[in-house]
Structures are given as C-alpha cells and as structure tokens.
Image (cartoon, rainbow, N blue to C red; front, side, top):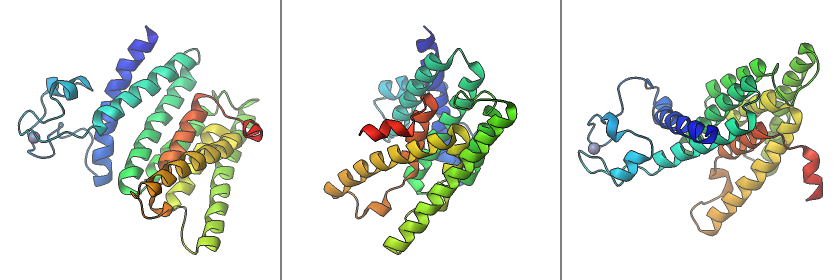
Length: 257
Ligand SMILES: [Zn+2]
C-alpha cells in the first residue's frame, strides 16, 4: 500500500522533473505557461498529461499534430516513481531524513538529465544539494554524535568531495593534457560529500567510474562516441550518490572485489 501510494506520488513528481529538465537550462519559468507540444505549441489538456498513462493512450504522439513525444518523458516518470517508492519503503520510519534524501534524489535526477543533454551541471543545483546536506546533517543516519560532530561530518564530507575530484582533475590534466573533469563536477562532488560524508564520496566515485567506463566503452565499441571525454560524468556521479543516499556503501566493501 505504502509502495503504491508513493509510486503514484513519484509519477507526479517525475512529470514535474521533466518540466524542470526541459525548461531550466533555457532559463524558462517552470510554472508558466502550462505544458505545450514543442512542435505545434498546442496546450496539452490535463487528461493528456497524466504521467505514463497518457503517453500509452496517445501512442507517443501529440493529439493535435501527431508529432512524436519523446519516450524520455515516461521513462523519467517511471524512474522517479520507482526511486520514490523504494526510498519511502526504506526510510518512512525517519520522515525527516526521508524528506531530505528524496529532495536530494529529485535534484540529482534533474542534474543527471540536464548533464546528459547539455554536458553542463548548474552550480545552483550543487548549492541546493549542499544546503540539503547541512539541513539534513542533524537527521543524517550516516553521521553521529552531537550537533557539532554532525556539522563536522557535513563539512569534512564536502571538503573531501571537492578536494579529491580537484586532485583527479589536476592529475587528468597532467596526463591527458586537457580538462577531463568539469568544474561543475567539483561542486557536485562537494555537495555529495555534504550529504553522505567522506565514505560516500569515495564509493560514489568508485561506482561512478565503474558505471561511466562501462557505458563509455560500450558506446566506443558501438562507434556511437568518438572518445571517452565526450561522455558526461555527472549522471554517473548522481547514480552513485542516489545509491549512497539509499544505503551508505562503505569503501571497505570494495576491498573484496
Ligand atoms: Zn503537437
């Protein structure tokens, strides 16, 4: 029951995240105007704007002009719904942490999708995540001790996140003679450290490198990408961070691999 209700709530949030992803990079308002078909600009009626269901009923086409609707929309809605349902099932006994973690998951989803499309990570998202990390530090299940101790976890996580990726960026520049890591990645890693602590930073990086290389090598093999540096890293950092927010992956787990 709780899974079903949070799944439906997640579908609605996912629909809103789609609006954020398509409008925020162009500096457009996310509340006005109401959704329109990007092709014929006809306003989308509320009954054609039901997450996933409308896409299926309309067979993925605009009711007015039959232009195809990207399958990204229902995929993002389903993904958001699943993440919401899993997080609610796991963390409903700690409602404050659940609220912080879910808000962070939604911001990370938007960051990942915008980075995929534009190769850019807006600093405003990283600052929002760091603010969530600070607010959440008092209820963060991965931090412990007094309020001051918890603040130190938040701070060291953030500094460690920025420092380690700044170091990797400098190293990459020495070896490959060009920027391998974007500045946006540095702020994003600081924010991930603020939310998950230094252990989360390490394992987020490990998981992101693993998923990112697997994805990059697949694209190279399929000749869909020219070189690894043209593949955004943000989506994989976001993926690692979401896993850590759900359940902290400790660095020592990787010792056995
Ligand atoms: Zn249309």
